[in-house]
Image (cartoon, rainbow, N blue to C red; front, side):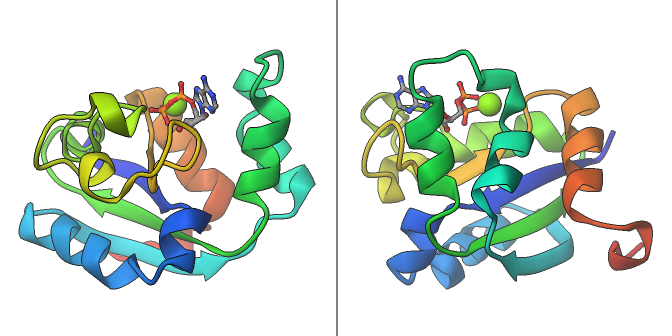
Length: 138
Ligand code: DAT
Ligand code: MG
């Protein structure tokens, strides 16, 4: 599967980092095949992150993700989901490798600048959570 789902999270959008992160995405050879800026409701964030609903950080995570707009993207590249996870770096910015987006732009384990699908199956589900077929360029 050559497409994955990505988000620029509220912390990064608020700090005016959207353009810098999009630049990093394109410089790394991804093609942006869909993109939009939207604000999630708390319910939207709870639905998107339902897999984490039993985790102790679920309330903090869903409040954060719904506090201001995010930028949702569909990225295309060979091995898209793993290539985008590699470019993002580890969940915790303090553990992310040099040169990764989370190392450069993340502020904490919760406010870590970007999201990326963690499997092909989840990429398909997350793309269709945000985008209809006619919004995705081919
Ligand atoms: P990832 O975003 O790298 O796939 P994840 O799926 O384990 O990480 O968690 C989803 C998000 O939840 C993560 O980007 C930030 C937040 N999160 C994860 N672990 C956390 C923790 N221990 N405390 C606070 N927020 C956390
Ligand atoms: Mg995850």
